[in-house]
Amino acid sequence: MHGDQIAATWVDINPGSKQRLHRHVPEQVYVIVHGKGKMQVGQHQQEVGVGDLVYIPSNTLHGIENIADDTLTYISAATPAFNISALYDTGELKEGQSV
Image 1 (tube, one colour):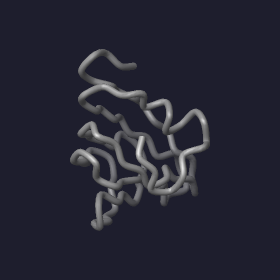
Image 2: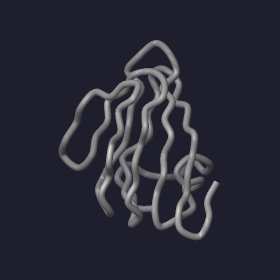
Image 3: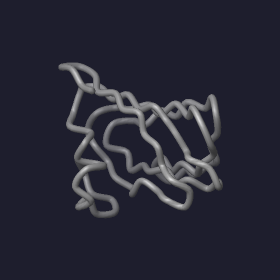
Image 4: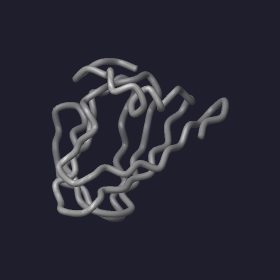
C-alpha cells in the first residue's frame, strides 16, 4: 500500500532467494518479523532476525538475502511514498539499479 507520504509492504523471501541490491530516494526501514537474513546497507553487511529494525538512508545501496531454511518475512516502510512494486513485480531491476 502507499499513500502520498508513506509506502508500506509485507515481503516474504523464500529460502535461498534475495532482493537485489538497489537504491532509491525515499528513506526506508525494514522490520524483520520472521526468519533470518543477511542485510546489506551501503558497505555494511550483517545478519538480521526477528525483531530487528534496519534503517536505510536516502540513495543508499541495500538488499537482503534469506539465509535460512524457512521464509524470511519483513515489513518495509518508506517515505516519501514511491512505487515499491517496481522492486518486486517486473523482475527487470538490475543489480545496483536506482528505482
